[in-house]
Length: 279
Length: 310
Image 1 (cartoon, chains in turn green, blue):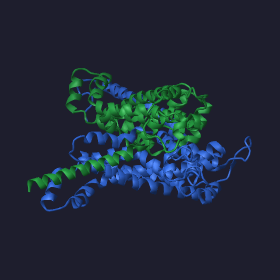
Image 2 (cartoon, helix red, strand yellow):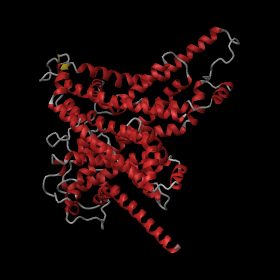
Image 3 (tube, rainbow over the protein chains, first blue to last red):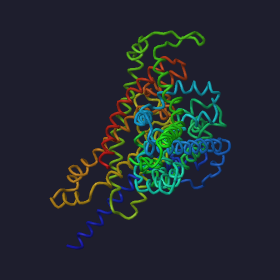
């Protein structure tokens, strides 16, 4: 009796693993194929039946992608742009959220609604005029064009205000008794206490900035400022005898976010589940 | 609400000092808000108002000529044009192809990964891995997979050398949708997993004691408890489906025969290819109206979530 039951349990476990492995294979298939193809010489990629295991991996393709494929420049631009946007969004969101959470001033509720209402305007809706604004400011094809429109975030201010409101009243009173002004209270008490929310916002901001596509496409023209997403568009168009470079470039473009996913898994999940609010 | 710097015992100081403090607090508040307000003013509200007004002006056929005020004519013409209606239809189809499929698959992965098994963390990481792929990365991957010369999928489907799947009017939109579902699967999996972990074990155990099988427990206990998350994911999915652009630009450029020209891509073509700002403005505002409806729905939901959280 016992033996039969345990055999049944073993079969069940094997089935569970089989299902997991099958699903994992389906999810990973596009990535695996891209990695494999990035390590094959172009003539092996078009050869049939296809090679699924690179016996003689050509790592130099990655060097070609970084250099001749300009991926190095594109990645640098993406890091710069996404990094600046993240820093700026965290800063402006902390300041605004502090005002909404701790200060009394006229029009407070109205202004909070103004902040929230920015969430309801998809960026796509405003691109016609925003591009004209960028051109007339003389910023076309430059870093400011990629960064300045995203210096503030209504979503971030909303998220951090929620977090700031959780700061216990006792702490506010204690800080007031210690003679803390607003600046010291904000930097020494509020911001450290709200670190998880700020971390989530930072990861979310970085990810959204890194993934931007339409805006960089319409305000940049030259490789020296283009981000990696637009770089991929150029790489896509390369000829068949360079197709391995396209594969390597795709992996290079995804790699930084893979690393981010592994290192900041907790913040990423928090940021995405909270950030999903914005879409 | 108490706040730092507030005079806690009125009467201990002269009223004039208090008034000055109050004025300083107001000044500080506006100082803190001003960076955000400037950015929003220039890059959100001004362009929104400007885009509204652009709808009433017809762009001249040749650059250099003044644009002409036409009132509501242009709005009516565009909204009833076959180009617009076909684009809207394509967008709705795209949303119908991507959103339910994505949620069903995300839920499936979340349920399968919600087991106590050795090494399950590895599978969780794999299932959430497509979060790391941007729309552009996913699109280039599928572009090469579906390429009629080198694509493995084309090879396995026996279509190598013939018309590419992305060039086939019947299969282009489904193919773009599959790429999109794959790219968003990681996020959907993360959302569904988080919701699944919040389902109390006692409820499921109680149902098991009452003789409910695995499927009944899932249908009668888990699924109802997941319904807020599913609804939430549906609304987010719809909003991002209506804003889809990158995958269209990289995979099909709106073709073949405009079969994949979703609203955002049509807007892009109108504004930056044919420089027809009037047409583009009408498209932008209709996009705005659609997403506004969806966002309001979603905000009501957040309100409820926040309320429950307290």
